[in-house]
Image (cartoon, rainbow, N blue to C red; front, side, top):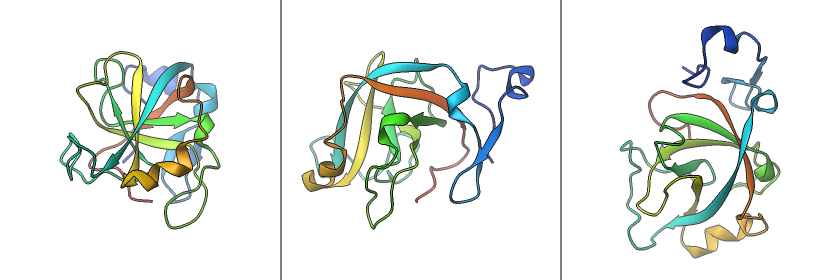
Length: 150
């Protein structure tokens, strides 16, 4: 079940129209929510210090899981990252811009995020065109359980 991002009042959520993702889930339209400009890095399965589970105990989802500083962006937050719209997804298709904050990292402190690209260094090639020094990130909602695999 998805709901409006924590920290917003019920009155605030009524002011934001909802949109549906390709899987039929409902999320709040990200373009109406204030955003941050954040520095980003990329990480992949198989790298030193990267396990098979994220900080929620879920399997990281390639091109969907994002590690954050939970003091800035709480875990279980759905994020919309405008610059990732149209990036290639593993197995085909194009990215819709939605990411799931389900991981944390020792080096991810403050206004930084770390995007999980998949298994091995080669998985990072689709995200390399991004300007990682400045990504437009908006809170788009909240999720329960593990991030959906898309």
